[in-house]
Amino acid sequence: MDWYPLRLTTPVKQHVFGGRALAERLGRTGLPDGPVAETWEVSDVDGEGARVADGSLDGRTLRRLVEDHPDELVGRGWRGPRFPVLTKFIDGTGALPVHLHADDHTARRLEGEPNGKTEAWHVLDAAPGATALVGVKAGVDRDTLHRALLAQDFDAVMRRLPVRAGQTVYVPGGTLHSFGPDTLVYEIEQTSDIQQHAMRRRMEDDSELDDGEWHTNLGRLLDEWRPGSRPEFHSGLSIQVDDGVEHTVLCAGPYFALERWRAGTTAPLVHDFSTALVVSNAGAPVTVESGGRSERLGRARSLLLPAALGRVRIQGPADVLLGYLPDLEQDIRTPLLAAGHGAAAVAALGEGLTDPRTEGT
Image 1 (cartoon, rainbow, N blue to C red):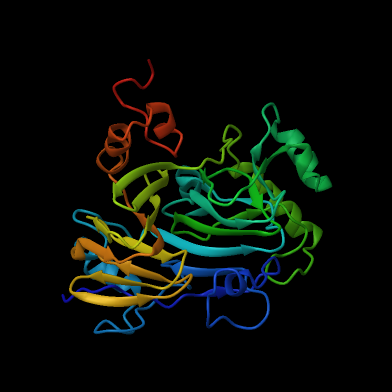
Image 2: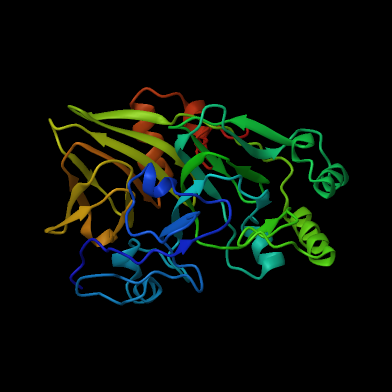
């Protein structure tokens, strides 16, 4: 297979909470008129799967490539029913609905799905005073939460946290959450579209649910809720790579890692990788070189680099987000500890980052 950087089709969601921030603040072109809530940069969700948009694989679905070439596309030894990572740009001009996604165990037990949906948000822009609802306050039980959801009084039971550009929060499956208004986010998550909403109105078109459907939704949400999940925003942990090149680990866990890399003009960004790499552009247009090919990557656009390519080079000035499937010890803990970051700070980036030799002591 002659692998190259894959430019994919990107489903666009025009939910009612969206606006024009992707075009006006990030410079994304080619969007439809009206509010745009989400662009699904790399998606293998059933019914919303991406296709390759150019080159010798033009028209091939991401699902077919995963099935036929899992080692070369995703990484040696990886196997699964679909590409494991979903990435999005999300415009929270309005507030997103309060909702949650099941974790793996609950998704298999209650949803009949192979996996749940743990996610992380990296804040690209936020208005002064912007906040997010992330997790439920300590001491809130199921009955108390149910009464608050019936009253639509979310602040009575949920943690409202300040939001600032450059921060990230890792949100395990089962965590009740929302963000917005006036918040622009890059999201990475497990490939899934399962979710349970607490709202009386649909996010797609703002139509009202009847009482029966709403109460059913609330019951399912409560069944899938994880009471102990209380994530925090943080600024990530940085490593100086070269003269004018810095990368910041924004979050990491067993399902994905997300890093932000910035480069000036003195030295290029050069990065070796062994699993599929999603490159999303948070800055000015750049040229991405990999596998002997060069691709121009515009503002708020993404490329999927197959694992077989192994290396990427981007000449600065550059500001890009890199998402991938990590080896938590090799890719995250070891380099961050070597850079002088403490074990507690590393563990706070997500899940599964505690030193197994000290866990439980």
